[in-house]
Image (cartoon, rainbow, N blue to C red; front, side):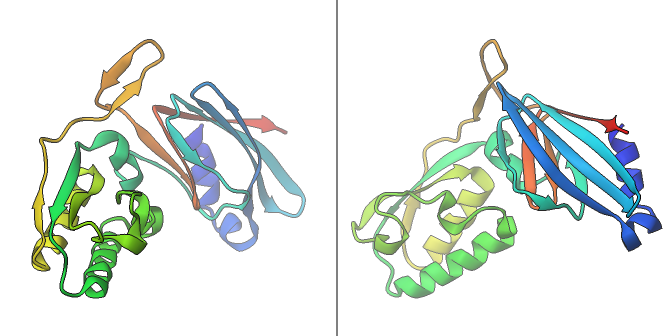
Amino acid sequence: MLDQLQALMSTEEFDERGSLGIESVGFSDQHVAITLELRLEKTTRQVWRIDCSGALQHQIGDGYVEDLDVTAEHVLLWPHTEPHVELFYRGRPADRVALLGELAEAHWRMVGPWFSLDRFLNPHPGIVRLFEPNHGMFAEGPDRIIQEYASVLRRHGIQVSSPPPWHPKRWDGQAWVEGAFGLKLLLLGRSWVVCSEVTARRIQP
């Protein structure tokens, strides 16, 4: 019934007078249940529940939701679906501030607002003290992001190297398995859930 909820949100009535808000969220083992209140006008109220099974990660706020989508292609899925790699460096940049500025621009082009700049960087020593030791691990994360970081470092004269990439593993309820086939992302505005299945049903009235 998720398509029915999405259809209601795509109507002219919803655009002009409607709203969708998160009322409550419930968590259990690898399961997230989100209760939503849909209003099409002052006197029309519906309560919906979205269930996310096989949930691996989530970030859920409160308040109104402007859009709802389920997708299998999104940067938020990369930590679970992409090969991972470590990036090591040797050397110091001539202009550390310029390197960090270029790194921030490259990061934004890749992932937009969904991950902070320090999300994949080595937390020790962190952004403030990057390159104080002239060698070490610079970052770890999805291969396509790390390769972009490596390109920035090379342009600033830093030597880089990486061991072979590996695929992240996840718990399927019985064992750790490699790969993340069939993972989906539920997007509710700026709230999201990475999971294996998304279902929806109307519970009131």
